[in-house]
Image 1 (cartoon, rainbow, N blue to C red):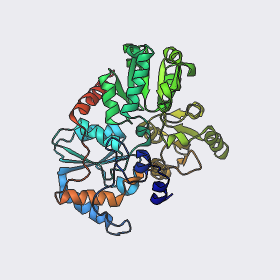
Image 2 (cartoon, rainbow, N blue to C red):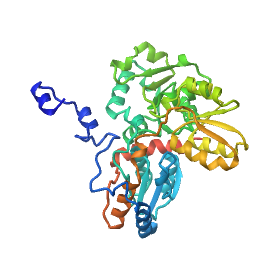
Image 3 (cartoon, rainbow, N blue to C red):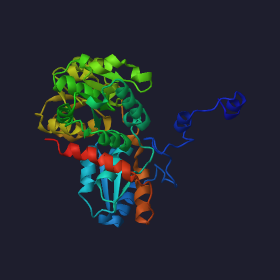
Image 4 (cartoon, helix red, strand yellow):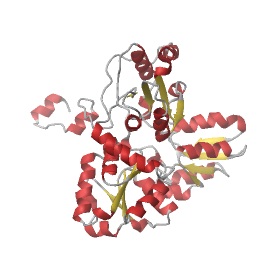
Length: 394
């Protein structure tokens, strides 16, 4: 429908529609906004040389972080690689670096800004590199959820636990309400701590990690868990259902890991006899239950490093990493395949490409600060409190 037709029908596009069309910006949204300036052409044969020259010119003033899901063309310029929290801590451990260039997504850069000093400037090469999971929980929605818990008479019994893959606003909410942050590798420890503080947990924003940890690792049942849908009144739950639940799971998920299915697992076992199925805990519960091994990104990497030569593996996580691992271990005769037949990159991670990185580094080398990620003082204080509780976990 054209703009003229819309005006003729007196239909006004919603803010979300405008945001998705790239005609509006929401500073609190993970989707970000368009980058200013002109990017180099992706076909420029000198991109690698330009990135290298700009990085050398900056020297110790710049520290480049590369998330495991980034493209190879970007990863080659990373000073360190890792998952989101490891990279944020690595940034904090480099106080001499004036610029932290985070090749990842928006919430990761926010975490780095929270943990680094005020003198350091965190930069995201493309502000539109967001996270669909983090987008699934806004501060307003979570506040409404807390109101529902209060009306049900259970808010004082509930401890929020938020996954690292959440916005600074959600981390701040968690800190303000006595909760903690978790990663995919320490989720059980975080939940153990939370149940020592209260009787129930509100787990944000990934329902699958919360459910898998509670049921698979802590011996709860699926009946102990309910899913709060922010798009339905009262989350689509009755007060009685909220009172009966131990785990109140936010209706969020990872767009990459959520694609894997039980059919994917069954199919790969038929195609590759003797294959080991290794998946991330952000996958659906039935996928995790059918897998041989379950663990974080770092766990997946270490498991393949320790795997014997000749072993066969089907990996349920982002394709850039799986492909990189397959190439890395091919010489050791380890067969590593993507769990699903459908190619599945993380589309927002892939927004950080070589042209954006070159533009960022060259701008910084010329003294122009671009795409800075800054968390406001109050949000940072409460978010940092939640992160510090995680760091203090036994």
